[in-house]
Amino acid sequence: MKTGIVGAVIVAVVLSACHATDESRIQAELLQLSENRQKWDAQAIQDYSFDYDKVAMIFTRPVHIEVAGGNVSRVTDRGSGAVYSNAGVPTVDSLFAEIDRAIAEPNEHLLAEYDATLGYPTTITLGSNIPDTGLSQSITNLQRTPWRSPSPPVT
Image: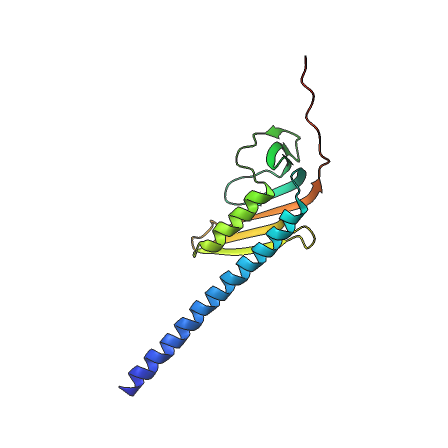
């Protein structure tokens, strides 16, 4: 009887330690996300460009993304120079949202790294409990784009 009680106590302690570790990891990821998002937001950068690479099961090309007014304005293949549709390509804000969603998912294994000065995500690696379904994304060469006034209307 004593052995059963001791065993139950040990299992309870181990399970609570695992739960605490998960909560600590999640809290640390949320804190890191919050601090870096605040850095990014404080810069009020709405016009910028960056090189974007995504490695996943699906074929993705290395692209250069231009953002104007917070929205993707142009996507260019860095190898061929071909211009692609803006659909589905990220902005820095959408990458922050992706990290936030990944933290909330219990089956995602997240590793996010951020730029020390501006706070934007530089690397996002998402693993999964399902084999061969992870992905890695990286942002390099982020540059602020000088604000451009809209072209005057043609009359």
